[in-house]
Length: 332
Image 1 (tube, one colour):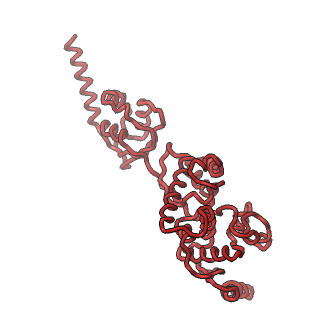
Image 2: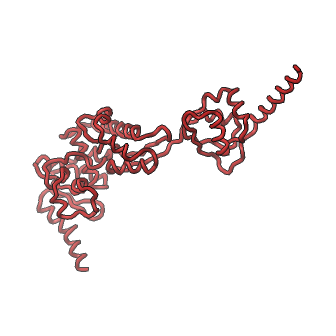
Image 3: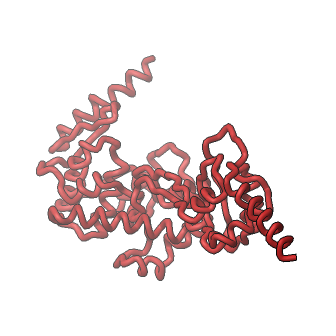
């Protein structure tokens, strides 16, 4: 009996050793991405690996995992695993692997709702939950922001690297606001301007929407800051557009005459809040504008603007770049 038991054990050990030294199924792919849900058992993980073509579906995987202790170190998450690994190599990879990071880029100048849509489209969070948090006063206060009623303007545009199963609306927003706060601290080390932090963000959001040319932003900022000092209305089209629900895409005269707390053709000073989420260049432009007495600017129809110091100079620029062009079109 002792001899028989020894032979059985030896045979079983041989089978287990042979399995441990056998590479996984051959594959045309160098690696595969697998998802292991939270609280998955070793048996469930074994089936996930087998379905993904990483191992042969064999009970010896469980035995080997338990004998080596790896069954207690498997992680939940989304992982990229190389194919053709031996079982022990695979177990070690599963124990040490870092979750797959997916880049999600948020461009400068988007509204909070548009940002929520990007994350929702990628199935990172629910859009409604995201927007609820954007306006949740308790959540905003927990982020260390003072005198802020909405996170519009504080969702910093950048590329974020997200991992499945550990990402949600709350964690995304926390990361974006923390990035904003880091950039803000870097910028104000060079000195602050005449506006408060909140006012700076509001004006930076307007500068962001007025031009796509980063080199022009300090001049755009100068125009608006000069207007504020003189008590002139900002008269910024993007602010009007932000205040129009379901904007059609075509700004008309009646829109400029319709009151909203964002219509800077009608209200004095700044609108009640940011109109988008500005990037670093726009924030920096408001904090450190050019020292020029510009009061006006008009599009040159090539992505840049003509800046003027007087109304007469501005009117000539409008004729040159806008009205003459319209007349030319009508003649055609």
